[in-house]
Amino acid sequence: MVNNILVTGGAGYIGSHTVLQLLLGGYNTVVVDNLDNASDIALKRVKELADDFGKNLVFHQVDLRDKPALENVFAETKFDAVIHFAGLKAVGESMQKPLLYFNNNLIGTITLLEVMATHGCKQLVFSSSATVYGWPKEVPCTEEFPLSAANPYGRTKLFIEEICRDVYSSDSEWKIMLLRYFNPVGAHPSGYIGEDPRGIPNNLMPYVQQVAVGRRPHLTVFGTDYPTKDGTGLGFLTITWVLMSVFSALLDGPRVVGLGIHLLLTLFLLPHPLDGFDVFQVRDYIHVVDLADGHIAALRKLSEANIGCEVYNLGTGKGTSVLEMVAAFEKASGKKIPLVMAARRPGDAETVYAATEKAEHELSWKAKYGIDEMCRDQWNWASKNPYGYGSPDGTN
Image 1 (cartoon, rainbow, N blue to C red):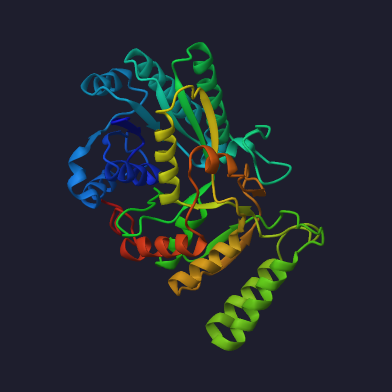
Image 2 (cartoon, rainbow, N blue to C red):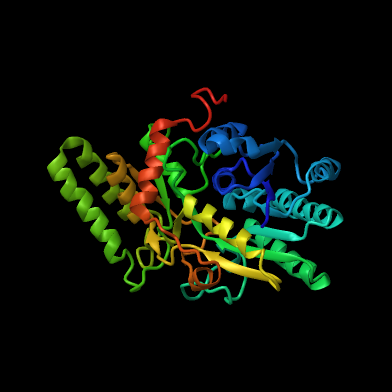
């Protein structure tokens, strides 16, 4: 059995949830994280949630590009395997600062692989991303789809996958799991750990939760210039959303009347042609606890012989639109989320969701939670921690 696990980026959103599942599973877990976009408070809470197993967690504040510091970590513990989360992950920022992303994500990974090889640790679970599929021509995405990342962040994931394949080709002692996860949302059911982005959130649900707790005035829905499935322009669901808003306004009074009027004006006065846009960008949202369990399943797979370098999608296999997620969150929280429509962000794809049969068959893993549970746990975290791991003045 694999016993001593190194988790890079373990103080982050997905990393902290995975660390908790590792501890509860009886693994000795060491975390390295430079805390550039994470908080060590997350790990303190993980220790508390793990109860007696919390004593098996060790944390080192280390940047993966600092090779001597990383060597020291490996010198202290003989690791059986590494789960690699560490890296910058904002699509929009990667478009503005591509060299920063290539330096951080690629150099950090190369340094990690070099140190692993030096210390005889050749079992790796890499947290890749569905962004490696770019703008897929059809869905669901299978692991055999052509790869063509549409932004620098996605390209770092794609390059790292290729590096891992080359490492295995050069040395068959390596066992490598490449996990292409889709859109993680939600939080631990306790509401004690969750997603706490620094600055303006780059993903949908942390932004939604910040609107719900009053930290932001509205949610900007990107993707009003995406084509509709039927090519008719606004799209049936968009029109339905507006009509529902107006109907709700008639029932709920002046405050919601204002929102309904705002939605109508926003949709019909947008500086875009009406032929071919829709706000319903579709994604495969997956509960972060399901995703953490997927990493544990991949870790268990490493104990088998003749693994090689394998790739698995981790998703639900179901596509959900932005507005469907917003509606589910409103139901879970009892909060109305004001919307402002806007054009798509550079680098975003339209519709992406996973084919998950390979992971279900070979890893014995399947996502358990639906969007209602995702939104329930997201709101539980947000309502208990409106400023994440920090305070209103931005301090921890």
